[in-house]
Length: 237
Length: 297
Image (tube, rainbow over all chains, first blue to last red; front, side, top):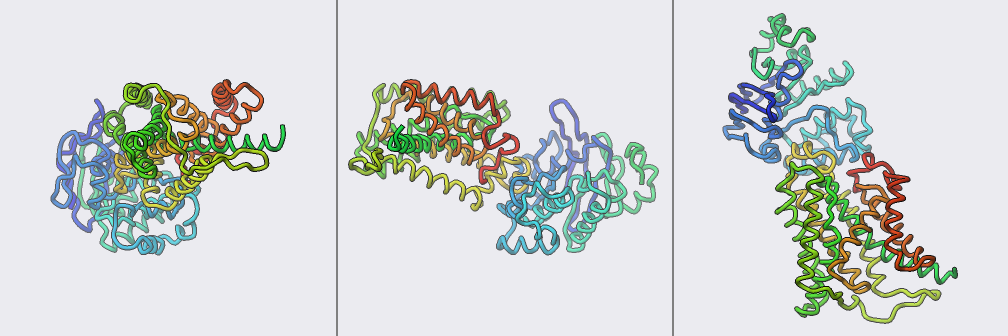
């Protein structure tokens, strides 16, 4: 479904991604793990069109998407839940969700809202509140809901656990688990390697802009010492 | 001061205030979309008046059609400014972009001078008839049009931002460009629309006020200054601020004429601007960062 070949991303003179190749098949859950500055976020941002692709190619459903503007990539069914949540703070929860299907998704807005509310009942209780007044965990749920309401073919999440309390992280991952069971294709970027390796079918370890290891998450868990070394010693599995 | 004089002052203040509020709303639209202060905002107003006067006088169009043509043309000029200049340098600093709008303002002004000359242009009020006298104060029929349509447009804008899909998208782009793009929203097109709306609002202000004040090629700068003062007074970035600031400035100016020579009217507006920036740089309604990007509220 998604095929990234020899991707490189430079910002000015700075190399963020040197040479990254991987593929995600339909219905698969893939995690990209690695330490800070490994190029994980830049890889996602290149796929969604927010970061410039210096070289290499990105194909989605057999069609080249690198070079397309971000809003066109989104309309093809590639959703990115950005790092740091990025809710539309002054707008209500419901307006945030409606914006998620402003240009995406099919059917009536009310049905889309109902679908999201049934998975995230807390958002229903808070639908008329300003999104900026929600807790961090609720905001994370909201941005995931805002991406889901657009019925994405692939859901990409950038550090969904960042800055959240452990039990909230568990709630986010159990939500993602539920999505996986409905057949949702997911590409996850995480620093929290433990959670990511438990969740994903396959994982890719990035370091200094290159793929160091890749394989079934269970295999990587079995080689946790090597993975830890690439994660820079501060991360333990 | 007699009660008739106070009433007169209110009428004048609200009439002029509506215009300042419309100019301020136009400023806000472009500011929220691009972070740029559009110095050509006053030229939009002048063009609205002059184009209507020409369409009525020279081309002989009926007034209603002339008004529509003028507003559409000024909106199109807004789109052209974004297409030809602003969108080309979106990576430029806000200061660069502001300088570009200043240059465009000069181009429009000098072109108008060459085209229609230095004399004021004029067309008749929307409805003919003598002014109404209420409690000794004089109310021009055109002033009713100015205040009425002004308020109507403000209400319509509020509804547009809070209840329409495109309005919500404009807010989303103003709040967080990247997040909006990830939702499939075409940010470039949304910015373009802000310029069109801003131009149309300015053009409308010119159409409304010209029967009362005439339109001269060089009025733009003063008008822009007043609209800017209205925004600064209320707090930049918020629609209600521009409206509150516009009416406040209109009333202050009208009151100043009662006690000071009327030639000092513009100086009063400037003094208010300077005072507002000194005492409450964030505006009457609060901090810029906090209030910014919430046009709907």
